[in-house]
Length: 485
Image (cartoon, rainbow, N blue to C red; front, side, top):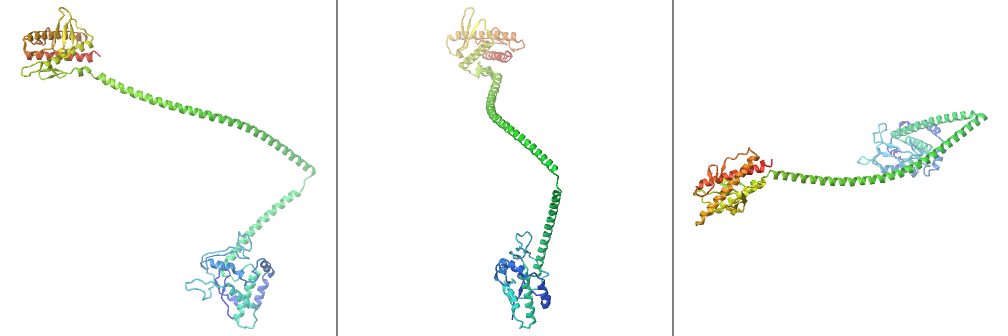
């Protein structure tokens, strides 16, 4: 008769029977079985769990088969709930969850070589029912087989079967699973001890409380205590009523405060609206004021520029061109070799008369004997006293008999102009003696030359006209600067 290998009922590793079990005598076996709990306890628990009455039933090892199929290695396993094995923090005493760590089993005996291992080194899934059934069947076989091996295997199978049927743990177990089981049971024992100590302490407190209550009080003491409690109750009720009244009063005050708060919120909103409007108006006014100030500054700058500007210097620009004195670019005079047209000379005399007239009007000065009539190239001077004649201040180059008479009137007009200039210079000196005129005027002469054209050299006449323009320039400068100061 052949027997299959024996496996651990937890991790499914093959087991090698210990020599102490193989050499176990029948009397020793009977003594071990007698010390085990009665089978009624196992039967009572098994009756509630169908399929667990016999170790060889298919349902007994269902959780081992499901664990083996889900695990990748016999060493790294999460065991499913097993009947009869309880762990800490477990809701039921007959269920356990044991985590087998991935470690090397040092204390475990060497497994029996088996052809069930594949070439890759993985352990083939053997049917645990077959090995256990074979062990269980041996206890019912007759003693016809006198082989020592058969006897020992049968005794071992019966021992494991007895352990499995009379306890809550399936056997056999390997050394590592046994150690884990012992650790779990030790933790359960410690927790049970702590729970027992707690119950003992609680029981002591309850007994002390009962002893204090059992001492008893007299009727008068009880009545006093009841009266005291009633007084405390009435006082508490009064305090509660007072608190209720205060709460109602506070509720009313809270409502009034809420109304005041809403009114303040409306008032605040109006205030901020008015404030924002005021800020906008202020910003607009500030922008307008800044614009006015900028315009005012620009106007002041323009005014200062205009005040510094001498319009008379621009209107009457007096200079020179060689030996000629010029006014606004018009040459005044004639010299041999430079034929200046009479139209240019007449226009220059018209500008010169207009300058004298402008200076006199600005100084609010009136000539006594003459009235200036500036008319451009055909300007003249009117005598206001005596014979009251008109003198033309322009010449002509026509060759006819009347030229001599016209040149005579032209000379008289130039002498009259020189007389008006002399009176104006005297008026300026009377206002400001510091004004210096380089050429003196006496009758028809200015400096050392005459302003008459007849019986005079053109060079001398041109030089005298240049002196006239210089005197007018000095008067104009004093009029635009000194008179205003």
